[in-house]
Length: 443
Image (cartoon, rainbow, N blue to C red; front, top):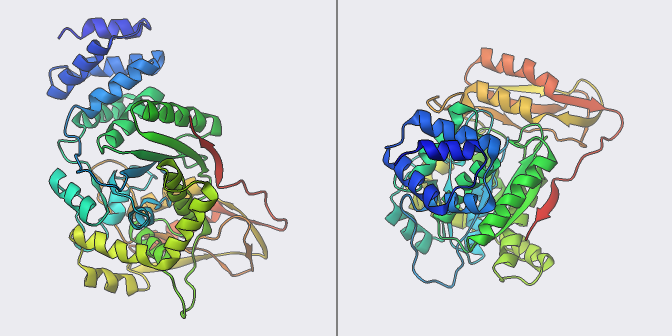
């Protein structure tokens, strides 16, 4: 195809026809459009935008550029959750087995982290033997037999998005709402879902810094998801403070398991209420979206009862074994106090209440410890990170632990400890802490 007129049309702000968009997706997936022309087109979209119809056509064309998961008829609805990413965001791990125990099928296609944003697949790679890359047929089998799977997209799923995102990442066009919407929803629509809940984060460590930006993105995704036949809603959540008490791949797996466990008769394990709150909230909304609960209040009770039953913890084991994990090795690793060679603690220097726990700075430190990527080729150290995070509003005494650092060596531990001093503040007066859940966006 002659691609130049499409670049010129979008440069001038004109609307492209559905066939033009479908043809260009087909051609760049096939590799017949040069990267420099596609880069020019992306920049034109960045400045001129896309109409709702153009975004819809682009999303569906990207979905149809490869395989779409097919599932047999089943009374269990197909559901999923997607997060725009943050520090300590491990919700997907406990949520998938909980949803399976609530009578859903969960084909959760996840991604890897870049920069300070942790990736679900990187966390799962810290489990001995766990396989994150599965063929489409095996994904379907596990979903039908176990009820849930968490894995990466296959080479043949949404190849158009892989090519587009690689160019967006190096051409400064990532923060385009139509392109973000098409990227996220093309992958989710390839799962053949009945319902989808979106966690759209805002704050210092989020992709969208302000609540207004997050709301704009959420509304666009909710509108398009529903237009494409998937019952979709979005929840705006705060990402100025890390989610949970731990951040770092293996440390987040440990915290996820603790969230699923009913620990009676043993000393309580510190749990982050915000993690459990989001897990319960997303599950409750999906129960309402699919008609399995008549109200959010009833749905919340249903999710709480299910979590307390211990069934989601057993489902977790079933899921990881189905994906190749060595359960004995996993449990042995889980029983260890820590797996990193060096552990350091940052202590409070005075009595008071925590008034700051800066998610961005903490995320940068964790990345530099080796838990995150500066580039897509960066090697990951799965055992480093932080835990025992003190959260805003909590009382602390002088000498109390603000954060525990897990490092590969003493020098890295000392450097991280020095940098993290600026991430925390302790004040005499209780701080004003914003709510974790800010708004629910529906049609």
